[in-house]
Length: 371
Ligand SMILES: Cc1cc2nc3c(=O)[nH]c(=O)nc-3n(C[C@H](O)[C@H](O)[C@H](O)COP(=O)(O)OP(=O)(O)OC[C@H]3O[C@@H](n4cnc5c(N)ncnc54)[C@H](O)[C@@H]3O)c2cc1C
Image (cartoon, rainbow, N blue to C red; front, side, top):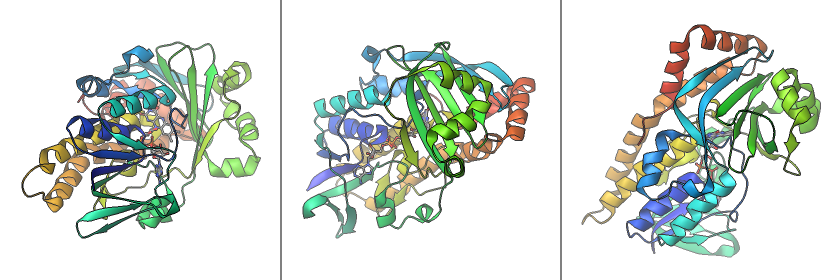
């Protein structure tokens, strides 16, 4: 039996694997895909993660992350405002960063099963059975659910949020364009918003949260971009002039920001599986890394104690998770209401321009302290 099986190898799963393996636990991470691969994400990471990454020798200096220090917000009309970012962040592609962490976790002693989709997880007699394709099974004392925003497993586990349909889609490109290297911009359009910021190798990430109803109405991603996104003059310029580097965009459906629970069926949820913050906050990756730290610290502390007390571990993790993240998720959900409409995006930009302390407060409340 494994000490810990981690289901899903995004940032949360990989950092749990790295920390737990370094602490000497027998860890297996199961990931549906094979590294490296692209995923839908704005690829801007808040600097709050740097001390944690450095403490595990996992800050990806050699991948040349790009420092980002300024923020710009535009309304659907193109009216805009900009400001320095208090804490700032860095840009790095998930293609490179996840692969880098995968190698680090492997060097620390974590085992990996790649190209393998977990089918089901059941808990019985104080241990877990993890079902894999072809009727294979793995058993574990602890299971970490780090399988992202929404997966078939959520249905299997009958998690309540999965019953609500979500109106959002996510689309990502890598492009070459003319844009200041140390800026991140969020451009509103009817039904969503689109971020642009630099990653490594002179490439820019262009990623947006759009609406399924727009996609249905216009019939294709390209038609929706031409008809809806390009009404914002900043986006029109990007879509007309940039060099697009993917053959086709990365797309995901049904992105849900509904509240979830950090522990369900005794599975300890980490990263987006425990809760997804709205992307406008640019804090999902930092939260995924931070939740991995909270969880792994607790597991390491409790695992080798003479009487492993699962109930107390679960209770304490849920308490720390809520204390750290609940307010951020709430503020993110409510701030998102100012985005994606002609009228409210104008108000948002106006507030941002005329009441800078308010904008600062929102940023502060959707971000954490360096950890
Ligand atoms: C449009 C958009 C833009 C965003 N932009 C930003 C941004 O700029 N900055 C930021 O900080 N955050 C951003 N985020 C949020 C950020 O991408 C996530 O919070 C982050 O990726 C969470 O990492 P994770 O490890 O929890 O999940 P993921 O990175 O999604 O990893 C989950 C993994 O689990 C695997 N998996 C799923 N099911 C199974 C299964 N059954 N068996 C095995 N493996 C499985 C998947 O293949 C995947 O690799 C954005 C999100 C969206 C939607």
